[in-house]
Length: 282
Image 1 (spheres, rainbow, N blue to C red):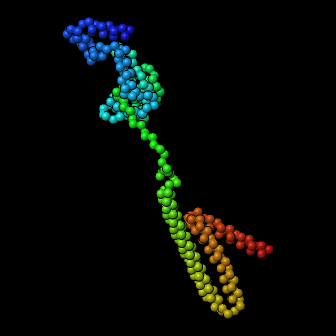
Image 2 (image 1 turned 90 degrees about the vertical axis):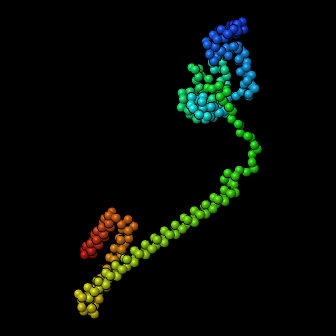
Image 3 (image 1 turned 60 degrees about the horizontal axis):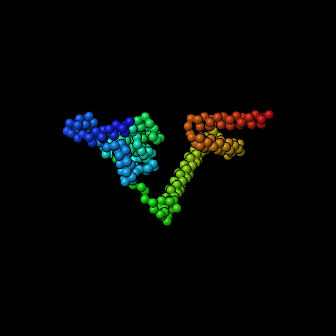
């Protein structure tokens, strides 16, 4: 029907070319008057020949789509891949060739391959666009070259290996230095703890000895000597056990929980000694 109407209009235009007819023609069809003067078949053939001369796009080609086709202002182009090439309307005017493109970026539209109620290709929502072939230009293909003899970004590359080896060496030296400093600090702390315990033990020995001398002035008697010897032995044993308890307290953090644990161990030791004393009496 559209073809018959175009034929009739074309014949009418050939029969009459007066000013009145041209005015009525232009007033009715406005900017489409020039297009209606050509047959649909003629425009289709011209469109196909134009596509062939320009190297028509084919499915899979990488192209750039103008931003103006996305109803946005500016000269930005969106890259994408061609999914459809052909006609997309059946209007009175001869159909024009359209290109369906699946864009790489989401342009936040509702297009998913459906154009004017008809599906032409499949793509995620917001990534599709159907435009005229004049609004699309191809991307330059990647130049194919022969493979290089060695890739300088591969891990086996000598420069990369050298830098990695230097990096590992620096890291190992830093770790060894930190370990040595930590060991020296730990040893110094142990020395300080042992010296403080020795000083406490010496002061306790001196105070107990002076107390015993004051209590027993006659220090030449055998009874006094035995008493002092037993006192020193018991004091050495108690001091050693207290030193061990203090070390345990420091090892467990020296906080309130560690103090309670030391008190529990001390009570257990006293109970054990009392049990031994009762067993000896029996």
